[in-house]
Length: 164
Image (cartoon, rainbow, N blue to C red; front, top):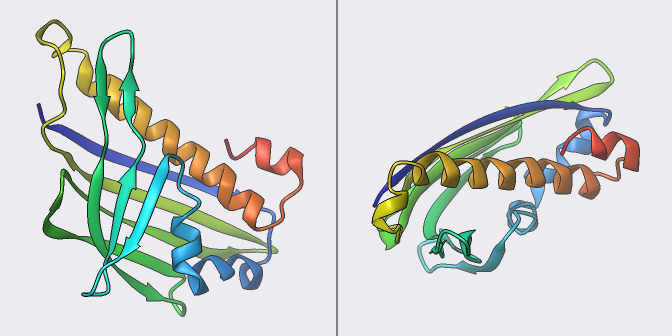
């Protein structure tokens, strides 16, 4: 079964824009903050192959190890990291963008992720409920990613709790 993913989240973080831009200057380590990322491999073409730990539910016997490759474009002047999928690599097509913008003395941070997970093994009896369940699992990963981005920017615990 194929499952479509479309997630968009925004948050304002109490960090100066100049400090938040550190996320753009070290894209590889920013990627490594993504939850369930088991392995990240730089490819010869400059793309990165992401391999995630299984996502799913043991109770429903749904488990999918997502892997995909993406090329990254960083535009520090626009406060943007954008990635496009590399066709034919992995079992998913995931693209997205992380955008940073100044917001007074803070920074606005938004993340958009969309794509498709291919050949997700779902028992027949769970086919109707599987897509929203898996989409929810992915959305939770994005929420956790915001939390980890906040940690990497040195936010205090009470500010980080507001990101998760």
